[in-house]
Image 1: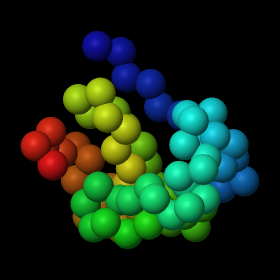
Image 2: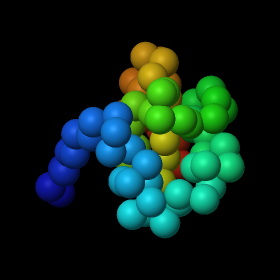
Image 3: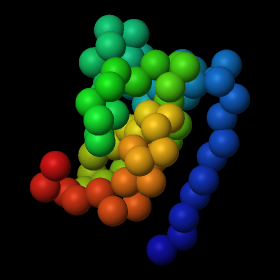
Image 4: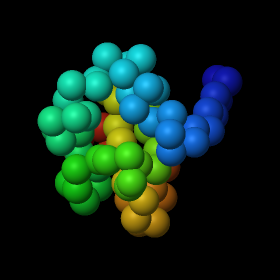
Length: 75
């Protein structure tokens, strides 16, 4: 399976999330880090991946970012 990585500048985060169709949820504070539950913002957004058909976000906390590699679909 081919892996695709995309790097974003902090000024591009809102546009990127908008292209995913999640801008309103993002602005309303409804997008949460999968590991700690913190609200994802332009200041703490670290990574995004797709697991089991769902988009999964991680904040800047190292443990949250690293846990993307071991994310269980049961969460």
